[in-house]
Figure 1 (cartoon, rainbow, N blue to C red):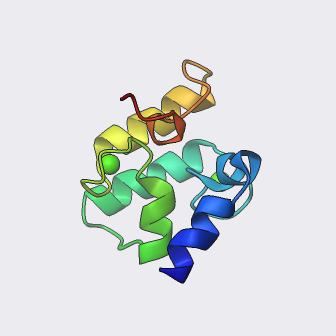
Figure 2: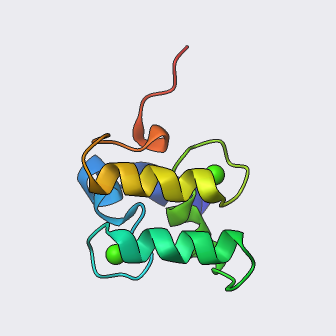
Length: 90
Ligand SMILES: [Ca+2]
Ligand SMILES: [Ca+2]
């Protein structure tokens, strides 16, 4: 419960900075997409907090190739936000 509150209080810019950044260099680049692909292929296992950063499509189905594609799209500026960052439509 406490963790959920802390997460909600993060500023949008702080969330944006770290979502998709798996190797912790504070940049979203191809190295991060490769980590997502390696994880989804079972070559490496990301830990729980990295999985949270990697699951950028917002469907909470875990980390898969779709998440890697979104990271790549963001690198080339096809998108400027991940689906998980967009407001939920009501
Ligand atoms: Ca990175
Ligand atoms: Ca996902």
